[in-house]
Image (tube, rainbow, N blue to C red; front, side, top):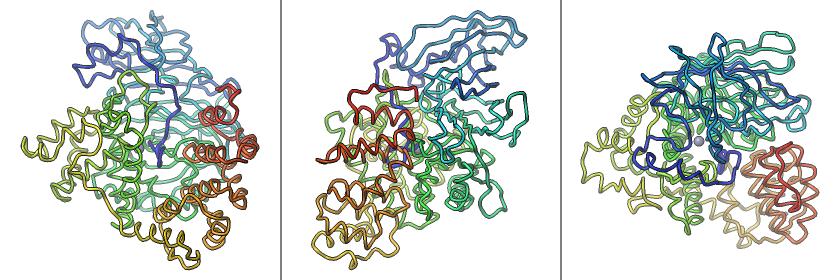
Length: 636
Ligand SMILES: [Zn+2]
């Protein structure tokens, strides 16, 4: 997933401490044990989920059945599922006979275990249930929160441990499951899922249309994803492979198809690097403007923020990141949330290699350098709690989403770059290709990764392992001494232009021709925080910063404008804040406004207009900032 820079900060839930019993004993001795799940897969394990659900937009619920196929160990008597904020109506055998079910104690982070007595000789259970408005994986948008503003919209976000709020299953990334689904939606809407679309146009049924899906490759349950709305489709790319396309609301479809026109080239580049794409189609769903995240790598169907639509294909690194997850994360998955860096570190490295393949080494080097700068900022931020900068994460007893940072992404990528530098690119690439092959459709832990690395790349050479500081990289805070930070002369030149401007050169004299996003980012980040109105007017008039379609560049410019209370940019600011709701952009801009003397009134006025558009998680964060007396509410 992508939030921060491009990673998705999942719905924030305050970190809560798990009950004492939950983390005791087994967790310490067995790294493969997932302390964020109640499941006991050694006894009975979910292997397949079949959903039959109806979407009720008025009640904001999905209701129906989940039929689970189980692998049952001899002598096992019950299966334990993860649930949270679900109403379980009854549990039956496939033929309808009632099965006894009970609940365990509710845990604030993990939810409530559902224990089902196994049917004699059977390997299927049917859970009759419905979601509730508290089911945080499901986001029910009003028409105002969409681009078309006429139809409501629903989407799910399962990572990290939210799938249990809409599907009663074993919600652990180490318990891979295939799935099928039949989703009934209002007749004017279309359902899409992270699976093969068996009935792309739907089938009329009483009161709606039914859409059917199947994914025969086993995935971690956080990747089961659905979206329902006024959604149209268009294939993109050269047409020979016909593997790529875009889904979006009709009014956004042209822009989406233009922006992602290179998707099939990107897919071919990724395959040339690290082996065949194993999922069939690769499509991108451009989400409504209120989508609070950067992107989410749901298999076959990446969900991305519309802020990726820069209008000039300048933000395609986000698509490269989500595509890379088709290998790192979706094909080879972190077995527990301690091992999250195995998803994101490998993906950040792979993303950079795709960008290099498509746009050349200079662009890739710029990206890596910007990421490194972000990592350094993150390491500084955690200087008081350095444990949080270890790759093997200490998330036991906490919500894995509570402390999302750049560490698993950028430190993970730095570790792989160190390995590449040491063994040489050719050998490293062959190893990485074999790694994806060896662990395809599997979930692994960090200790298992170390074993694998020793055997397959380091030749079980203990001295080499010490020399490369493998243990330090994975289990200790900060960056080890054999780290080689990436540098970019191209970015340095952009920084030099910013300093020249600060020293009094006019904007017209700056050499900005042909700059990539990262050069603009470095330029704007290097400008002094305080500039005069005349300087800002010169920049804006010459470089047209207030009119940028590239959200990353526009964001940095607007933040600079706010810090200097440069009013001529405020029309652009208001437009930006009322046309998209990505938390990475809207929250820092409102905070910056509130930090200026006259900003309170302006911030409240703009927020009153923007709030109906924003996603619940963004509203919760901003309500606290902008109206301390208001209570965070989940109801809208
Ligand atoms: Zn990611």
